[in-house]
Length: 105
Ligand SMILES: [Zn+2]
Image (tube, rainbow, N blue to C red; front, side):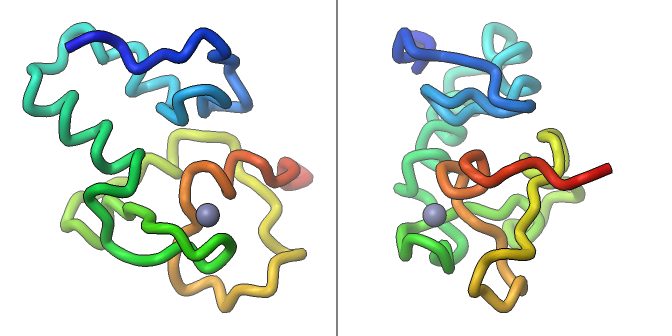
């Protein structure tokens, strides 16, 4: 499967601002089998979702909810979610999370 890179790819603190893959997903992409690639794309596009993003209302995918031991959001720099009017119980979608400012260290 071809890379989903959309020619505006930019590393936005661990997540691509163009295709919303994490740097880990981009670096392992060539070594993934097609089934994994398709699944990853479907999760990013919201065709596979575990919940709805509280920020934008679009489908979002949480790896933990799906039964995995870690989530894509662990791989990117921590974002500051304190200004959001969400209850914090579910993750944001990749687009919303990547647009937030970084959390102060
Ligand atoms: Zn969202």
